[in-house]
Image 1 (cartoon, helix red, strand yellow):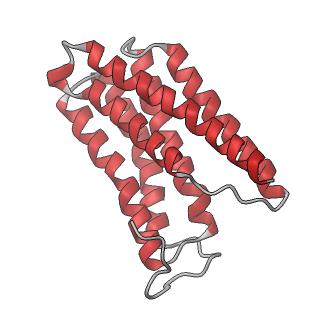
Image 2: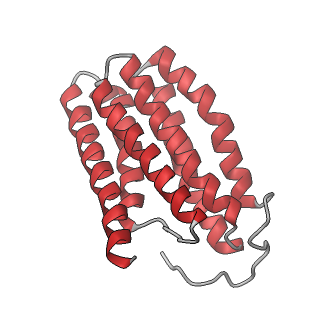
Length: 186
């Protein structure tokens, strides 16, 4: 994955209606009906395929943003859409008693805390860009939900729980990484 500047910047940093943001807005809009399906069906092919398709759009909007030019709105909205989808999926599975609520609460508290931390830092002019662990954390959260929704694994709940607790562990570690990295540089 290259972090170099796009070959042709189609959008300035203040643009809102970019191709990447359209994908992000679509992710927000499609998350609600998908969570309703998960709440209704639990593990099913309909839930699993919907989850895989919606989860994969995170990579699409990132690719579009790198290709067309990143924006401040995209830098804010994309991680928010990730959190909405991941926490929503985890909560829908906890409501069905597939995942334990304490794990979901740990993830939600970490996500809220780091978002607040970033907001405070941003108001002080400090940028806290996404770090590799944070990106991996998002992938692990989405994979944990996907594993729990995958029908062939429904009879083996231990696999989904291992995936969940790995995601929770990485979620906590990545939060500490952001705070400790900031403490070490400022």
